[in-house]
Image (cartoon, rainbow, N blue to C red; front, side):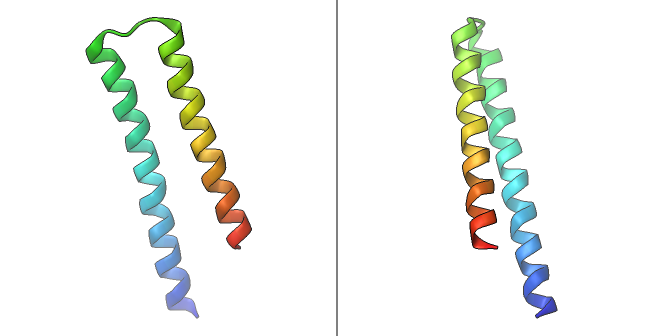
Length: 63
């Protein structure tokens, strides 16, 4: 049982790091492309926030 929890926490860690890297990649893309309009940032952060909240919902539902 304890080993299964370790593996679960390891995968949760990798998932969290992956989400952060995707967010940083989206931010860097906007900086490189020089997309400084307000709508680009809103869509990026709104989509990122919705994705994170959905993943947390799924994790809570799973237990």
